[in-house]
Amino acid sequence: MKNSGEKRYLLLLTTVALGTMLNPLNSSMIAIALARLQEEFHLTFSDASWLISTYYLASGIGQPVMGKLSDIYGQKRLFLWGLFLIAAASLLAPLSPNFGWLLVFRIVQAIGSSTLFPAGMGIVRRIITTNQAKALGVLSIFSSTSAAFGPSVGGFLLHFGDWPAVFLINLPFILSSFILAIRILPKDSGMPKQKARIDLAGVALFSAMIISWLLFLLSLEQTVNWWMLIAGILLAGFFYKLESTREDPFIDVKSLRKNVNVTLIYAQFILVNTIFYSVFFGVPSYLQNVHHFDAKNSGLMMLSIAGFGVIITPLVGRWIDRSGAKPALTVGAAVLTIGVLLMLSVHDQTSAVWMFLIFSVLGISNGFNNLSMQSALYAHVEPSETGTASGLFMTSRYIGTILSSSLLGVLFGKQITTAHFHEIAVVCAVIAAIVLMLTIRMPNAVARQKAGSR
Image (tube, rainbow, N blue to C red; front, side, top):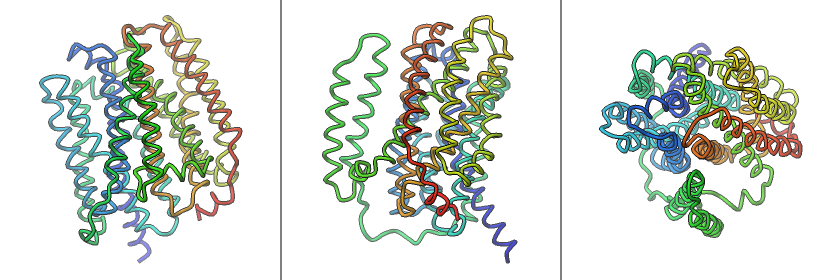
């Protein structure tokens, strides 16, 4: 019976992992394909960067909405529908007659993958009642690993199958997850009698606010759109006022106001991801345009970030269990600062070995920061708030990636040069210094963290 229970436990985690990995995998694989897509559809880097920003915009909005729907209409049902949407988008994207249609299919892909994480987490939290934190940690590491290896996988796919392969590679994972989901995931309790209570006004305001900020940031490349900045500020004010009066808000702003530590963790995670994805999406294009690497070699270079992140994560996890998140997060912030400063030593004739070492430092920092940030979050929230906190945590990641794509659009928009690469490093160094200061002021809630892991 014990072996049977362990087998079902592993199959359940495998089913959810195969689904939830699709969002980070698809968000990172596209990085290595941007240069090729620029050629295919005759785009500037700013145009191509919309494949990144729209994906994360749709994901940032979709995660909490789909999480709510999965709680109401059934987690298994929404999980299967999410897989169906990704499959449809992945099949149709290679047939896109123009860039506009490709953007549409990417958005559909993002909505589908946004369904899988909250639905999958809900299933895991409902079924696995012992060692729950360990199970959630395994899934978190799995997602981080798939994101880290995305550019390397994308590089090989582009080398052997061109850019459509970046979309078609999803199908084996989708099929495996779909078959396992039907057989392994527990049945939903049935359709609810009450109507869905989705804060549509909050969703609409949040979407408009994020879009306004995004358009303002993207306008910095040419003529600054001050109207979008004003609109973003006003919409943020309206959004806060509306959500603070709602009984069932899209985002519980009152809770964020009361729990300052959690609010700052979200802000810190936005900044960490702004740096990480600026490097993640910017380095492959820089290597291909300035150092004339092909897609396969660019992908191999990005293994420095992926490989060291995977190696360091289990070690960090054991350290966090003993000492709490703050010591590991402090080291991660310091290593991140060192890594982005080392980027200033890269020049047109810099050897591949030195660049590999620099990117390895950034990979090590990623291994510290991802797990430490999530552990810090769970150490400062009650167990009953895990679902909501996880949704906002993922939304924070998406906001960070949107900011990174905007930064890359501004600095890499017209021409990709080493000077622009250094400008990105300087901006990231300033952000890393802020991350380090936020880490130093963070209390180290070891007691609750250890209690939550038992």
